[in-house]
Image (cartoon, rainbow, N blue to C red; front, side, top):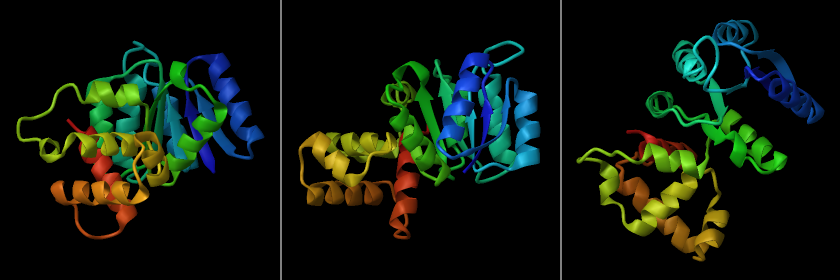
Length: 214
């Protein structure tokens, strides 16, 4: 797996670089600003970019805006946002193309290295990995005609856990329901969201993205 890191904190940037290389991954570039991020993506064409939200020069949302531009320029680029902040508008825009391969984790809530590596692998493979707190903040405002209003409370619970990247088996264990019940709920979700009866994995990503978009 080839990775580009964009993180302005030198210690964290170096720490991530050493961690990923120790896991046998290739860190093609590790940069500290959005311009160098886009240049590195152009030069190295990585499998996934790990991007902070707040970067120079204003330390507001430059990293996230650069990630949005990168996804527009290189469709299919996987991006894992790793930040201490939730930036709602550009986070929603990052999810809006429906292509998958996106994640958003909060630094202080990543309790285990294994969890971070698992999220990185899921995103690189085209899936999603969303921190529950990020999900909660992105769902504060919903449209009146939102198709998610058709879902039952249990179906919304299942979809929320799907957004966090959990498998059917894990969802069943967390909600204390059978695998068959999880499968049925997911089928109902696909139907109510009007997702095409194509590849189930692709529909899963589409359902999660529909859940997260404003």
